[in-house]
Image (cartoon, rainbow, N blue to C red; front, side):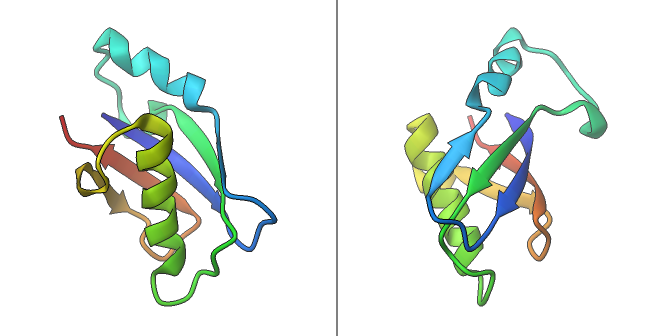
Length: 88
């Protein structure tokens, strides 16, 4: 499963918004990168030394109830817009 993610760092909360947009992935739709569903992640972490990326992976794994080892950042390691993939 792939989706895009906009990360807001230095927030007052750790939260994932828009998980309901991921439901259309369950329909087995093959989509282009531009058509991937988008979620927002608010994190208290700062974007220094990969701390925010680690926190994004932790938040996604908790919210979607998957192990952290299955969540990967495919694109956007140093950007606030990321493409995330969760292994089957």
